Length: 360
Ligand code: NAD
Ligand code: ZN
Image (cartoon, rainbow, N blue to C red):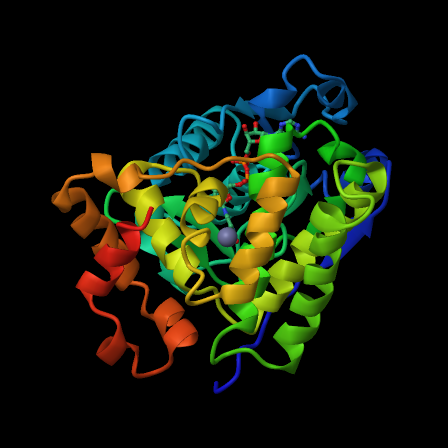
């Protein structure tokens, strides 16, 4: 097929308080497979009101997961799948409640319930053999677009790469802006900036087209309201906007591609274990020659929200570390192809990328 044939989310509920619909949405699915649900919930919600509001029945499993030590790994998914299958069998569905990390865990484990062996076997495009089980996402921090994307990004022993196929996409998403109100200011900034950077990169490259542009343009407008407008900041109105901006930023990428910032960010995550959104911010501030207007506006946002990013990081990195990161970034040809053009290899070498890391 010459053109991408994109699988969208089957159903979306949007609105303040819409989390309250979770129980009735799940009721229809409850009798499938082993007749229980697996809830994967960000550990942050332990002891919080939201945990009490989860409509779990006695037969269901609620797993609280600490997402802070590392981004989701292939081992983590395999272990979770094996443990659930051994103790209770095949769930009727998986519900993820949390940020991009939990979204990816829910998406990945839903696929791995029905695909044998380790998830490392399926890192890549269309390697999954069978549809997964029903999965529903409830984002509680906005920006990555993981709620809408066709991929579940996992870090494995060899690579950081998604399980990407039609079946990865959620069957249902519940977008309740009330859930993101508690996000601390720094994380609100970094994760929101992932959306902003998605749109800047989507727009500035060879794959940009009317479809991706329309979503990016609207998402950028929302980001500007949220981070630079007269009513900038963490308000209920801006939380509504950020949830929509995140989804539209993700939709923009489905027909376009991320670029140089994400390539560098993947290297920072894989080699130095920096978190995706924070790593993007570390890199993006130094890419003014590639994205002049975007980087300038990003710096205004940093100043307005008094976020200071570390400088001079490269001084503590060995040449080996920089080379390893550059190799990770170089091995993402689709991103360079989009950002620079099909002849990118004539313009970008491993040394070019090493020099980019030395700006950090
Ligand atoms: P996250 O899930 O890693 O969470 C970030 C932090 O915010 C955590 O400390 C978490 O506990 C906290 N948090 C979440 N909700 C909160 C709330 N309501 N109140 C207070 N704290 C809250 O965050 P993220 O930045 O959304 O996701 C990053 C992950 O997403 C990475 O693993 C990255 O690889 C992945 N990602 C996936 C895609 C995709 O398309 N699948 C795209 C981009 C990034
Ligand atoms: Zn991103």
